[in-house]
Image (cartoon, rainbow, N blue to C red; front, side, top):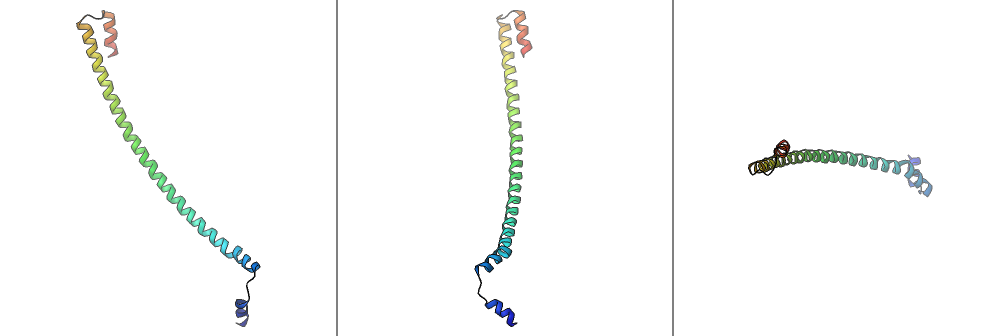
Length: 106
């Protein structure tokens, strides 16, 4: 036990402190940093997956709304063309060939 006590009472040199740091402290710090980085990476990946999912859901919803609006506009345009064709026909503003072209565009 005296030998162990002597080692404990022995002054620490810079060399000993450096070796201790390299052999014990630095590997421990490296492990702690790696563990934290792994956890942070996992959390970030999870959040990115969630954001991607929400973004795609919103895009799908918006795409449906846009397509519905386009369909409505197409129907309105068809109605306007029909009205215009009727007016041209009623008031003899176009010859039969032109009326046929108008009707085909509806």
